[in-house]
Length: 140
Image (cartoon, rainbow, N blue to C red; front, top):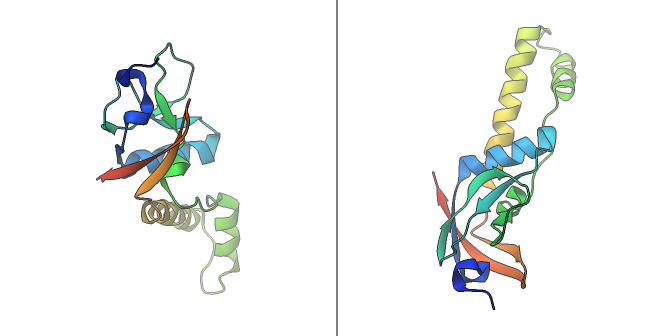
């Protein structure tokens, strides 16, 4: 029998920062970093999820939640090539590397904002006992 302190199904609410979710998703999209939001035992009703790169741990195992679970959907990340194509297609603007950099930075900021706007109030996490729904409390 698993004690409550090692049982992730006792968790009913996860507190997480919006920036941690955005950063973890971006790390996974840009370089497949394996970033997750980790909740470490001992477990209780309300827990904090923090950004972490997933790896094997000794029991009791932490609860590792893919950051993509915290949002409705993840839009495609803007590529520098696509940003350049858009800039070159604009007849009212001449291409410069400086303008390209600024436009790409703006596209990335818009992407990050879209992630922040797509956050969910409830998510399902995977546990050894199957799916478990928790409420999300957003910090920052």
